[in-house]
Length: 278
Image (cartoon, rainbow, N blue to C red; front, side, top):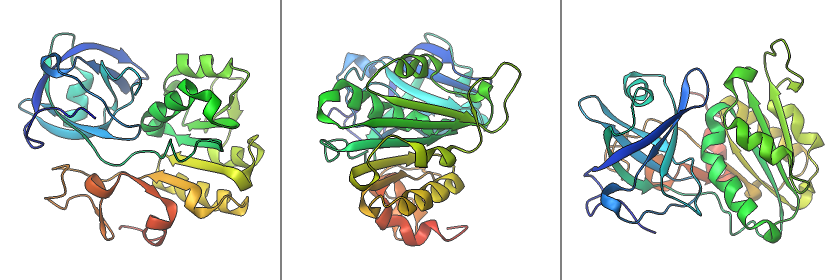
């Protein structure tokens, strides 16, 4: 795997190739590989993106692991740094460190059914896993993607969703909390879709990412349907600062999410997932 720079703490300059608007508050920023050097990542990993003069944030890589350049990050503008990222233009320069963190167990899932459950921007770190599975489709059993968003206007990767829904070898179900006029899709929470997913729950893996409350309900439903706990994988989100396990900002129970996470098997975080304010 190619990492950026020789020192994990020193960002290297990366040029913005383009910024693609996803929703009213979310965009995908495509970056050229710094200095033309190689880059690769595993699905679920993240980079630290530094906006000069403002600050640095961890952002999952949302691009295609088979074609890792440009380096893509999908960002929701919720603070000063992410708002600045949304305002970037072609040719702007940011600092980049990474990739960091653990990844979705895509190789371990070969030969099994795959159930992907995403909520909101949680689809961004799952998109590389989906693209990996589709690029190696013959290695997996039945594949289902369940995706929920607040409104139809908040759906990410619309072109991907349309393309994926057109495949005969993939089940895609999309739901929203609040429909608008003309919406013909599902309405309700994404966890309600799990029981009707066309997978063998006794023999599938489940990869889940989204708001923590959504993940708790998703896990409960998966366990009820007899998905083995060790086959459920979650991506946890916390405020990561150093990304190398030094500062402790992202501590979650006994773990530092930047170093041991953000992707965990459910049994590894089960105790902490049920405790509020961890």
